[in-house]
Image 1 (cartoon, rainbow, N blue to C red):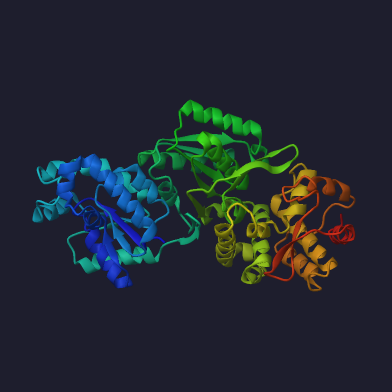
Image 2: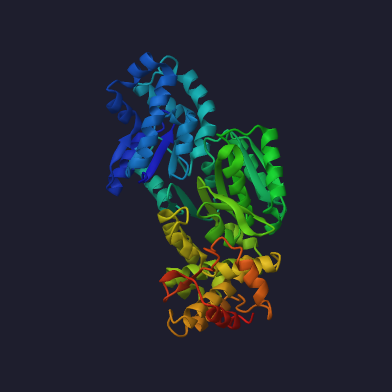
Amino acid sequence: MRPYAVFVGLPGSGKSTIASHIARRAGLEFQDSDELIVARERRSIPQIFEEEGEEGFRRIEAEVITEALSSFSGVLALGGGAVTTPQVRRALRGHRVVVMTADFDVLLERLRRRPGKRPLIDADPPGALARLRDEREPLYRQVATHVAKSANQPILRTADAVEKLLEEDVAAIDVGSYRVRIGRGLDDLVCQGAAGASAALIVHPADLAEPAGRLAGQLTERGIPAELHLVADGEAQKCSAELLRAWDRLGELAFGRDAIIIGLGGGATTDLAGFIAASWLRGIDVLQVPTSLLGMVDAAVGGKTGIDTSAGKNLVGAFHAPVGVIADLDHLRTLPRAELINGAAEMIKCGWIDDAHILDLMSRPGVLDDPWLDEAITRAIAVKARVVTEDFQERGLREILNYGHTLAHGIERAENYSIRHGEAVAIGCVFAAALAEAAGIAEAGLTERTRASMSAVGLPVTYTEGRREALLDAMSRDKKVRGGKLRFIVLNRQGEPRPYTPSHAELDTAFAAVGA
């Protein structure tokens, strides 16, 4: 459960007034964190300050707000100084946070109308307000997803403007404890995803040096010192040498448990960044910012992290949930065509195992250049989110996400990762469909329909002739092998995946279907 929206801002900014109007319009409950504190403590705010001091009050405030953020679905307004506590800033990650602002003179005039209620301001309103503004404005920028100005105008006009901001919000999909945000121009959301961190390390390949540098500057402006960490391109970065180099860097920077790793790049980068975070100090926060289509719909979502070894792909890794995933679709504009096609395979896979509407969207001519792609991306992420939320550590249901992957990982290893993952998955899905038909599990025609769905976006559906033995050897080392027997995910029909161990004859039929 999450609040519909959270409002923050300096004293006098109108956050509680506007928040209550927004709640009323939406038919939701409104709560103010100061009122929640008073109700829990049975003491007034000034009394708590007098008896506990500011430090004691902030501790109580952080406890109350953290609880409300996970148990309240209405509109929540926070005390002006709540954001000074790192725990609160971290708890606000992934929430819709509206920062209310106002000109200094407007704030001062409003505060003077209601003296005696603000212990940190009442003795010297102008001086105290100036000090609080300088201290808190960078922190408000850390947590903000929306900024609205409150002027000397009718309250309803300000509420209209805020309501419009919230209506234009980006898509948000919950995956257990964190959110995937999907939209365009999401730099501010990336910064908000790191709110409360003591420092950030941005892991990125060379071709993303410019956006990585821009992000580092934005984080530093908001009070989060950020460093860049350049890694190799593609699958070459997912190796023990890169992992050791990252650990050495974190040690040099003295990164503590309250720091954050940001994975900015394709699926290989988010895999590596996640494992760096999972292994440093036995686990620190990671924020995933996938920049490839494949990364957005697959690798960055779900908390699987890892590196490759000489024995196979992703054999060393950990389940480590990110604090958030920011899928900024603007990154797709600069991708080569081949990379869009690569990512399309995982989307079509999601259509086969769950959401048939994805298959419809992806079969439309020119879908990779069409606004329909945005909907297909969102729906594919939603499929993975539903599965991962129910089975984070792949003890059962999550196995269905491996549809097409047993053969795909074998192909990748046999080709020394020179073939794109999505291309291998496309061939793997055709192979799995042929297995199901050969076993009499699936209805006739599944293999041809699978070929057609992959071919429609330019994906391959066959593999090199004569590679059967190399693929069998590679697949025998796969994580999905049980008791020395190969296990595949196959379909009874669209939307009905299941695990299956095939016979040698069924494997022969499937290999013939993909030309291997």
